[in-house]
Length: 501
Ligand code: GLU
Image 1 (cartoon, rainbow, N blue to C red):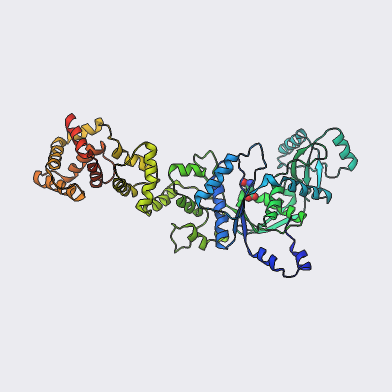
Image 2 (cartoon, rainbow, N blue to C red; image 1 turned 30 degrees about the horizontal axis):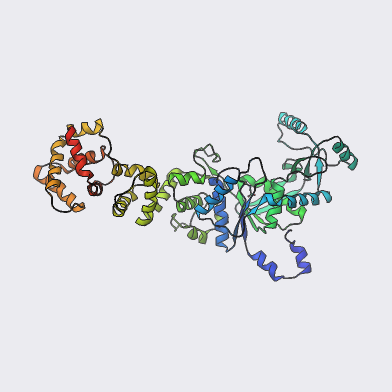
């Protein structure tokens, strides 16, 4: 079931070739609990694991920690896996489901009981609560008092015959020193006395049964089973690591290396949580962020490229330079502006056809369809440099699919600038023109009107913009004109204005 301990192997099988292969291959994992959608924090942990596996030619594995039956949902497993796939974080080997391994976890707890390293604790909820209250009053951190550590077999029988339920606790000596060299944070030391008393390994159960195994035990057993060589997870797990190291030793397992990544913080510097508006990957996806941009941005939350390197990098490029050592120790603030900038860079560098496909999906959702492929591609080019997220294309292209209402503001503008004359002149040019309308002709019309009638070009353009968009902002006028002209909307919109002016 578990990995051989090096010392034993060295004795019985010096330089076993198979073992050398195992120890050379780095094996990393993400162990999400399917109790919610894929959170950006989990996604970034996945990314760092994936990058390190990629960099070192190792494996990136997934284990679904679904043992909390009250909170785990299949739909969240699906959401998490789809999110990882979307981000480009593909995994190796079959996914391990923790719930399939409960019997094995229990058998390991049994081993610890048999070795006298763990014991039954009958402390009731009320008794624990009372202890916590007393500690609170004395301003002490919560810590179990290990009151049942030395119960005799008779005492245990008695409790059980009285119908009392029990958890299993693992003994943690007060003076035990736990140390590890964290690949991100350097040397870390803990003392047993700071771990909250003897550790609960399983939930409450009746009689001599062993209840549902808990996180720390299950993680150690499964990481060992999966031959994980590097555990990389959020710094909120540091005290769990201290506890888990004790379990590794008690079970005779080889220790992996541990790395704790800084947390992602909100703008106030607190841990980014569900309360911070958008945090799950599918929400970012729905808002129109690109997977490449998300992965790139998430890597920059904690990791930075070499000084001479750009920040816009593909996953493979990042992997080439990636090292756990280079991850920051301090928290990384989530920054919308930066994410938007990264996303816009990816949109700018996309091919017209690729982007057109994404825009078309947005248009279809709105019930809009372009008159021709060519027209759609032209509109794509027009919008490409102005969108930050893909969904921006909806408001940007709306006036090309739907004629905007004439507003009072627009009317007032045109009236006060004597735009009627201008619009009539433009219409005249359009009606008399025999050439095919295009950008050059648009420029020609503007130049001629401006020259022949002494009208300032700026006013000319603003008047046209008002009649096309019914407001003063919008994409490039000449390009827009061409698009509107291709669907006969330029003429129509100018005429509509002239009628009401
Ligand atoms: N299921 C745990 C979590 O989602 C896994 C932590 C770990 O990587 O060990 O926080």
